[in-house]
Amino acid sequence: MIVVIGLWVLAMIAGLCWARWAVTLLSALAVVGSIAVAPSNVLQPAGWFQLVAFGITPWLLAAQRLTHEAYLRRLQATEAFRVSRLQQAVRHLLDLQAKIRRTEARIAQITDVYHVTKETVRAMRIDELFAAALSVIPRLLDVQGLRLIDLASSPAESPLVLRARRTAEGRLAAEDTNHLMPLEQAVLESRQAGEPVMIELSALGPSTGGITRVAAANLFGEAGRIGMLIADELPQEQLPALKIVADQIALQLSRIHLYQAIQASAITDSLTGVYVRRYVCELAAEELARSKRQGLRCAVLMADLDLFKAKNDMYGHLVGDVVLREVAASFRKSLREVDLLGRFGGEEFCFLLIETDAQKAMAVAERLRRVVEARPIRAYDETLEQTVSIGVACFPDDGQELDALIERADQALYAAKRAGRNRVVRWSASKSQDAPGSRQSARQQ
Image 1 (cartoon, rainbow, N blue to C red):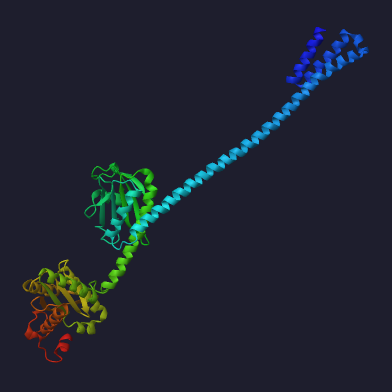
Image 2 (cartoon, one colour):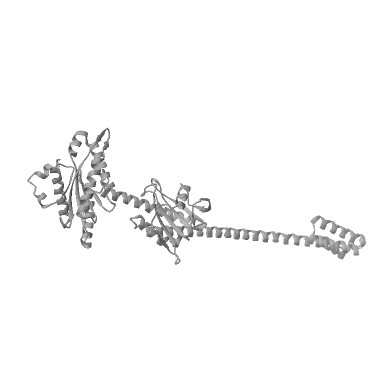
């Protein structure tokens, strides 16, 4: 009987832990063992109850186990579904956070663009643009110095360079404008195109003044590269911000170049390259007012090309245009940068010599006359000689107002024409007493 009970216990254990074939086998052995031990029990109800208990109870445990396992599977499936939903929610949250970060970065970029544009859009000159950029860049870039190279409005061999260095207070202070340094020349030649890039200066060779690396960003306009922005000791992670700043500065630099070109076309004679009459008179009036305030002297010169109409009639207007351009170029080369030169009309030119007395004015006028006389002019297939007549009127001796000085220099010019051309004459009261019609006849000479 002990064996039978042991088989039944094993059947119960099999119902809890093992496979169904083990339950079936052990239950059957327990039933058979019970019958074998006490065959008479089969004839009694208690015996049948015992047999049923030996056969059924292990299967009840097995069924309970299967039910519990099914419940656990459902519970696990439910938890797996919830975990999956939670993981999806986490992924969605992470994606949302990434989008928020990208949006914040984009907002920061737009804000940077706004600040740079706001500070630079009012600039009408390159120095104003650079000063405006210096006021906003320290808030955007952690740089030790900044350099703006303008390639469009300066000669290619000597571009304009504006520089700034970071002060102890953390702001960028402009330094003296100068031409290219060896470091800047090397960076300019090393970066002809492309995105902003970090350049280690140890590979460039020239003296770097203690700077270990720079970030260089080309400035592009419609016609190509118009300049370069160089940031000293810029952190690598700020290259995108440098590109934003460079793009905005390039946009404003292109606008300034366009403004300068329009302004130049409005104040410059397209044929000769000197100032037009209106503008040279405006500048001359300002200089004359300054001379009055400071007690300085100046002189007005009026020059006219001799026999120019005859050359136009003989060789044509194209040749005449070349003569005008070459004479104007000779005038420009013979004057100081502070002196004013403008085309007054036709073949007539007006000069204002700043801080110049009568003796020096006569010497300058004579030099101008000789320069033109000594220089043969090659115009297409013709080689021509040209002379000029020049009239001089000095402030304050010969007049106090600009109109009076121009008028008297004009009178002296026509006196030079009547005297035989190719000469310099200073105004005097006697030369202003022209006979009727004499000035018109002199103009035709």
